[in-house]
Amino acid sequence: GAVVSQHPSRVICKSGTSVKIECRSLDFQATTMFWYRQFPKKSLMLMATSNEGSKATYEQGVEKDKFLINHASLTLSTLTVTSAHPEDSSFYICSARDSIGYTDTQYFGPGTRLTVL
Amino acid sequence: AQKVTQAQTEISVVEKEDVTLDCVYETRDTTYYLFWYKQPPSGELVFLIRRNSFDEQNEISGRYSWNFQKSTSSFNFTITASQVVDSAVYFCALPQEYDGQNFVFGPGTRLSVLP
Image (cartoon, rainbow over all chains, first blue to last red; front, side, top):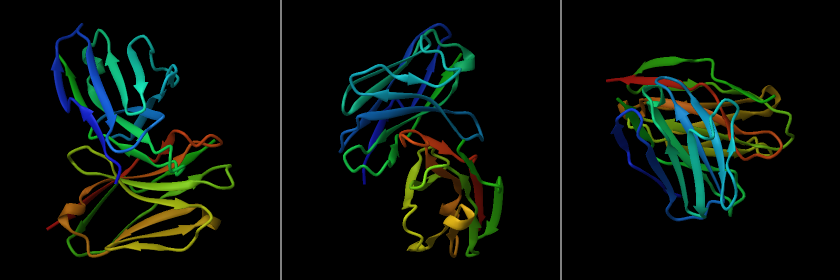
């Protein structure tokens, strides 16, 4: 099946620093990738839709200057949490949509657990 | 607007019992896909099944089976002879109306299978 990798899997950083999370589709091309945030014992909350070669589309309430998304190639999207604060601590998950198969299936990365001290 | 409801927040069963996870959805699309994902304690979402709304045949994959009823907008998931490794949170999902890009997820059902 399709594989999506995410790096790093876990990161601890100091308040005020920036953290970059990478999401890669390893064996398929993904014109569209998604970034989710998940709080403990909650469902996934879509943060933004990342389209290759264009600006990301952010969901209401998500600060685009805080969560910078870049989708420079068909296999890589990055999420940068700028000037992180403790309230940004969360589990961030990316997914990549199988655009070639036209099946709408999203394949998810293993997630990144961010802890901001 | 679209909505996915998973009424069971948490379920506990003893190993080898059968368990059914409910999913009810709302959509204005006439054709659509439905999905189930499993999220074990490690956190990664694992794709389980994609179902086309055209096809109402029940699907079986090993100990897993799915019952899709378009008339009642339900897409229930049954695990037969459950095992401890089935313990996870299970999400039902539906692509957003009209453009089908992002998903609408249900709140998830946490399944605990006890030895």
